[in-house]
Image (cartoon, rainbow, N blue to C red; front, side, top):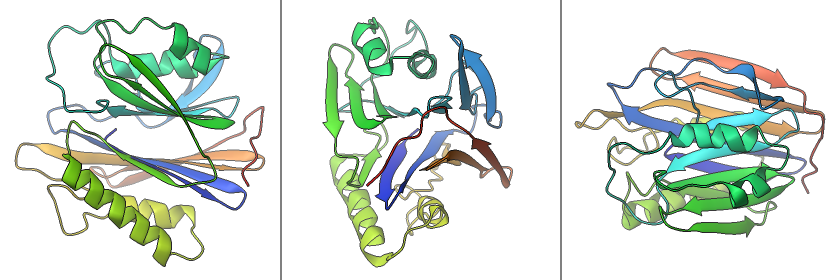
Length: 240
């Protein structure tokens, strides 16, 4: 949950996320469907807290989590609950934006949430205040977690993203996965990291949203396994 990109291409869009964790953390379960508040949700589950960083619901809503908000914060012990469980509350709601507006986030660690629900929304919680930023879903976007990357590195990663978009004339889902699966000659700050501190990229997860179907692709980098799960939403969003 440390790098996320959104790419809109013709009548499809791709949301792709890299999950960076310490090697002491258990691996996530492969994507499976569960019922959350009477809503069918597909997501890879974190066995430690039971939450997730990436989920799709039966109405075609996609939500992806990043650690941190605007600045690097000092993590503390005994937060009220996991941010991954907060995401499940949002994606398991019939009205995700309203749920975010009404949700009490007191004593929840800062996070950023990218929400595709017909429109594209960036939500940030900095530990004190909520920020809602509507985004243009016809444009491409990238986010890097402020908990792992400083401003200079975030700018460099954004530049790599822009170069990738310019050089790739007809973008396919696999092209985006390949871009996210490249360390770009930098194991400290590339898209695939392997730091001496034990931080490592565990997986790349992607949602491919196109007319009539949504596909979740989950690449478990540590076990060299790929899972592809088609998901047929009740509502289909249109992309220019």
